[in-house]
Amino acid sequence: MDNHNLKTIVKLEDIHKAYGDVEVLKGITMEVTEGEVVVLVGPSGTGKSTLLRCINQLTIPDRGRVWLEEIELTDHKTDIDAARRHIGMVFQDFNLFNHLTALGNVTLGLTRVLGMHKEEAHQKAMQELERVGLEDKWMNYPGQLSGGQKQRVAIARSLAMDPVVMLFDEPTSALDPELIGEVLLVMKDLALGGMTMVCVTHEIGFAREVASRIVFMEHGVIAESGTPEKMLKNPDLPRTKQFLGKISDLH
Amino acid sequence: MTFLAYLQIAIPKLAEGLLITFRVSLICLGIGVLIGFPAALARVYGPKWLRIIVTGYIEILRGTPVLVQLFLVYYGLPQFGLTLTAFSSAYIALGFNSSAYQAEYFRGAIQAISGGQMMAARSIGMSRIQAIRYVIIPQAFRFAIPAWSNEVVAMIKITSIVYLIAVPEMLYVAKELMAKYFNPFQTYITVGVIYLLVIAIMSIILNRLEKRLTIPGLDLAKRSSA
Image 1 (spheres, each protein chain N blue to C red):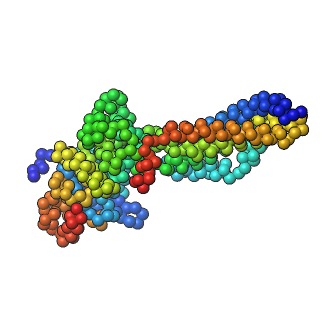
Image 2 (image 1 turned 180 degrees about the horizontal axis):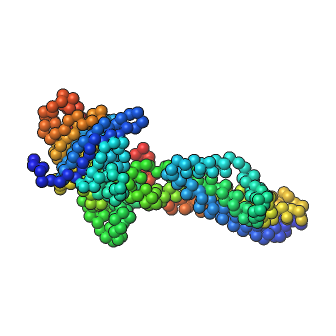
């Protein structure tokens, strides 16, 4: 694929993060260009989620720099709240606002962050709910939705902000097996629609179908990365082959 | 005098006292919310130095008898030239005391909300303040209602101690009646029954409020996705 004309959306430079004595990230450098779908895989505890949260600065790295397009997010002068609205994030546990309906969850950012009028926000929110196939569930509270529906509302909530990149932190790990498909379907649609995405997931089928790149992380560093083709069939490291082989068997 | 005849005299007087009981309770609960809720927010979200101050405030007020606090305000402050009326002393002592308990109830409610919701709010570009305002507070108030109901009941009963500084609430009226008619048993039984009725009614109202404000499906969600 020819990426020369595409602009860089996210750039990470030498990211370090430690929790106490445990160094979770030991110098991660990577770039995500427009329209790319990057799938991060690796054993648990290797810092994949931490890395994702370093991108939108929900976790502040100890060292290293992060850019969103031309804005340096790690610069203290950057208005991080303003920058964050351009970075969508989907969590393992959905983290919907429990006191608001599906519609309320999607509109809250539109009205309170973007200052949209209520009517306009409703219209926009309904469009996003339609996009994830939940327009008829708009009046339901999170407690009245299935896990898969909750996650789709969470995706709609992020999409409503018109992000330039979407981060997915194990979006299907908390779901019953029969509900995973509906969430992956929405994610595939997004990927095919050209959304720039960084996904921590072990859904190898998803990676094989839509990933531009699979990044294998272990012990806080990027061990190897490449196209799904290469990574799944013919990786450089035996360890990559072993790990991806194992999770492919599972799915 | 028969008990019935006595009640005809006593009830209107006790009712006047009860109004004062209500007034003191309401104002003290109000002061309690106004200080207690921000104190709870400060204790959860504040910087370390503020958390220490607030925790100290809460522990001191909860760790000493409210009667001592009341006397300190009413009898102690005049020594420093600050003389307050009995009413003001009651409002301040009981209100501040209540704020300490309410702060703890609200803190429990705030901490019952998953940290993930705060993260999600931040991820769509909300500031910390906005996330607290639009995501945490609306849920915290709902979660706090059951514990807060206890505080309402406790407050109505606790106001009875202000008769010791001659605030003419119900118990003070009772003491006057008793001195006149020499019938402590009838008087205190009557007072006790009135407290019981008032508290039963308050409990029903607060229970209804709690049910009305329940977030649809939330209990269900808690059980199924633990």
